[in-house]
Image 1 (tube, one colour):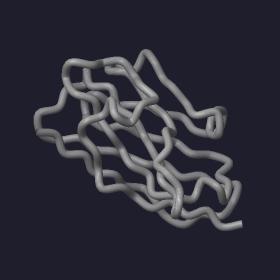
Image 2 (cartoon, helix red, strand yellow):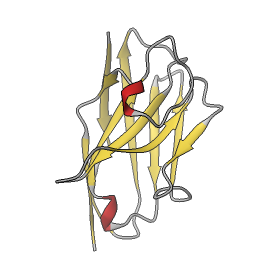
Image 3 (cartoon, helix red, strand yellow):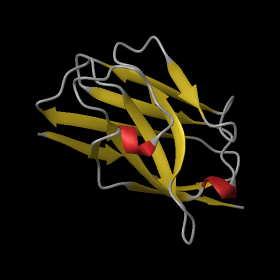
Image 4 (tube, helix red, strand yellow):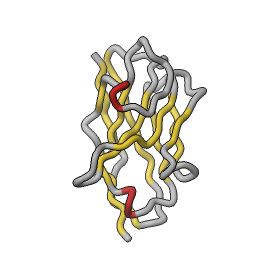
Length: 126
């Protein structure tokens, strides 16, 4: 089993920055692809960014490309999401997700991820 714990959320003004962290524990390997998704009130969960096992491949939603950056520290089993130039429409609960050992490639599809964290709230004020 894999446990994922997000941290780093909070309240920030538009134009500001935050860095989210996702710490993995349990039977987890640096070979697992991981991702960030978000869900705003009244909206469906949407893909934000993903990184392959090893970190060679990254994916971004068009809405965050150029503003957000995903990275991973395999030694710490932690994935980060650096968020810059934040906008009010970035307000959401951000979830970290991991694929299983069989899949090291990054994916846009939420159904590809089997382990999920509890989420961390990001609120961007205008």
